[in-house]
Image (spheres, rainbow, N blue to C red):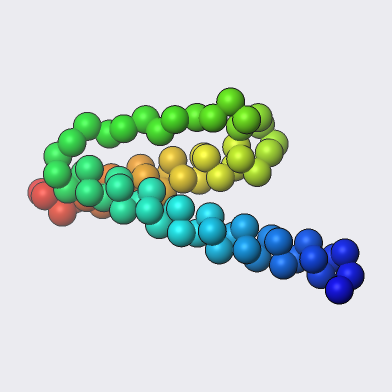
Length: 77
């Protein structure tokens, strides 16, 4: 297996795991919104430096939570 192929396999596994985390973040936001709870600010790890995968994933998870929260709020209206 070439180096590029190994890297592609790693990236596919990473994206699969992160997709699960993003769906969980969306679900948490939806549950909080539907229950009428306050919007939660997610923890921002120190390792999340601008331009890193951790930073991008954290921002995306935060937006997934916010969108889920908005949808959950719409449900109770």
